[in-house]
Length: 84
Ligand SMILES: [Zn+2]
Image (cartoon, rainbow, N blue to C red; front, side, top):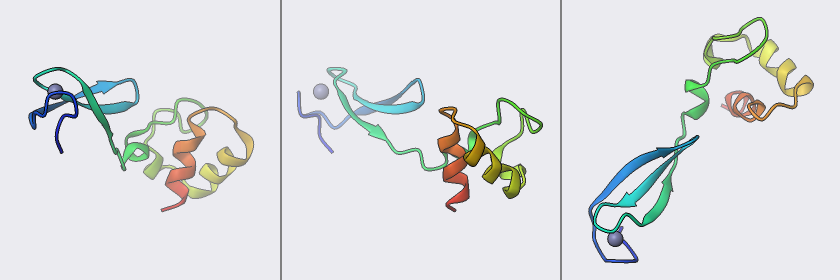
């Protein structure tokens, strides 16, 4: 991987809201987003009876219920947790 702006191969990572970006250290150009496969494992349920708990600790039945009955943005994490 090379910076398309200056050709440098020296990068650093910086968190931007939910994503981890990779940037060139010499010219600060954004290069790409880093895949964060385990996002949903870090996610804590923000509402409901399992509030504050990580998804792997929440029963599958309840997670399925959330996917069917909730339309919050975070439901995508719950979907990911069910596809494993
Ligand atoms: Zn650069």
